[in-house]
Image 1 (cartoon, rainbow, N blue to C red):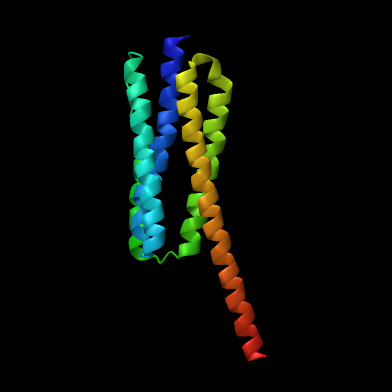
Image 2 (spheres, rainbow, N blue to C red):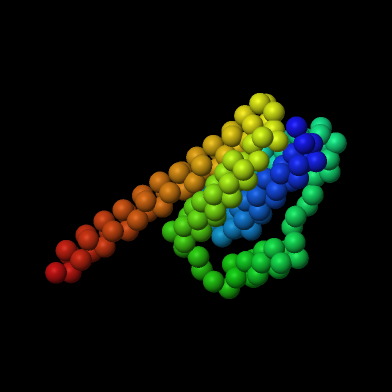
Length: 165
């Protein structure tokens, strides 16, 4: 096992988890819906747990966890906070944004894991697969929420149209 490569790959995966966490953190203030807030808080908390697992593994391998919050990302989150102050974001938009971000995280996480799996032992592979499964479950939950809102919206429109006709 190439320890230097393992540390590097784990730091890449840590960066993905950090970005997910920051996305939830930045957008969580945009919703006043209790159920959605509860779900997203759970997702954010799980991200934190996953980040800590990765950090622990990196340290056990003798590496240093990196903080990949770049200046560009920091500016993006500041812009997002300002946007939140001046625009009204609806629940559907938030869910779509989170779902798409989770989709990108899945794609990136899976690609990194599959192309570097040889650098990990069995325990590490299981941990990383569990983290990927969690991201996939979050995505599926967000997709289900979005689909439900869409059905409700369409049902409301159909009902409203039949009343006006």
